[in-house]
Image 1: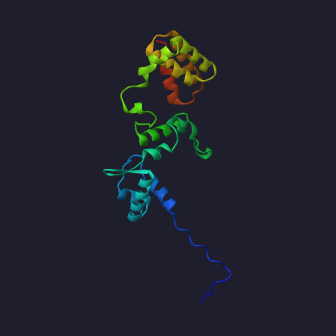
Image 2: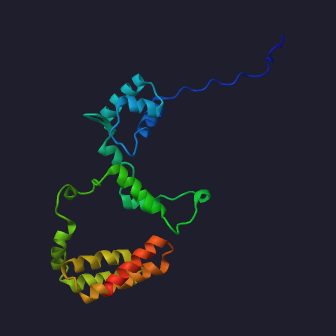
Image 3: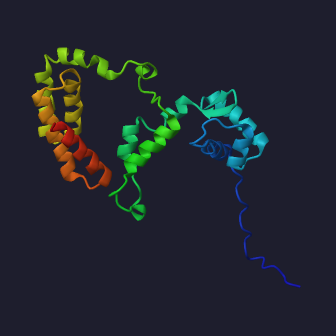
Length: 220
């Protein structure tokens, strides 16, 4: 008969999952391709007992992290807004670790980040009340031109941003002008130069193709 060695300390018992751990497991269970999930679906996806999911869901609803839906439950708008401020912020800040980088000659991490965000959050970006209505920002571009003292003033500002190495803000400003005055020579020149600079530094197949297409249309 083997006598156990009394000098060996027994391994510590595994710490049971905390309520916080279970809550995060439940939040992660919400799928990006199906925002509304039933109690049974959440139990299966999280690996938690249905009774535990029921208690946690009630608490998460009280905290404003989850909302009840007629056919199940959904991550709340408030919770979604905590992820990061804007899709543009995520596109700028999220990157793959060095060991997973494979180059971006054909696709881009930033584009995938945007696609995932759009797929989950949908068309409403929670940034402006106007997103809920059919009046686009372009409808006030004429007012912006008037406030700026005319198209030439805005083109001058766009040229300054371009000279400062900021082609994308320059494009935003030039597009405001072109919405109101499609043939404005100064705005078109800014667009051509801005797209040319972006093309010079592009190493991505699709980005290059798009920029070349835009330059062809601008030259017409």
